[in-house]
Image 1 (cartoon, rainbow, N blue to C red):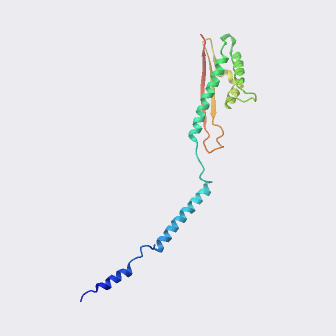
Image 2 (cartoon, helix red, strand yellow):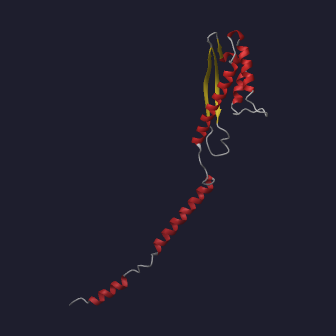
Image 3 (cartoon, one colour):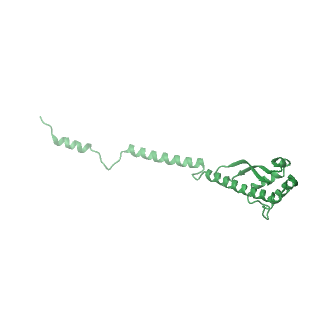
Length: 175
């Protein structure tokens, strides 16, 4: 007895899949994945307060370095003007008085310095132990200052508060 090939072909046609249709389980899996992804994005967006957060650390550090250079420039300029005609016989008091005067000349009409961190230098000068930061002898005059530089308004944008403290010596050698 032989096989009826026509019956086999009919069976294959009946059992063949419709290639345009998608099975229900795959459709449910895709919808579940998409909904889970959207839900997690919305959840993290609401929980973290949005996707707008940026960190500006490099600009904060650069800002502090620029301010350091400017502060050093202004203090060196004030120091040079204060020791211009200074002699050892004049003493520390005359130097301190001239230094205060030259530092106050940097203020504008409103009483503000070009850089706000220069206020801290003025506060150091007005302390009682300021004379101990001055080494004054017949050969040279050395002024040692502790300088603290901070970046401006780190709370206005997301960034880091950068504080840079250093000790700087300003020196004048007498001939």
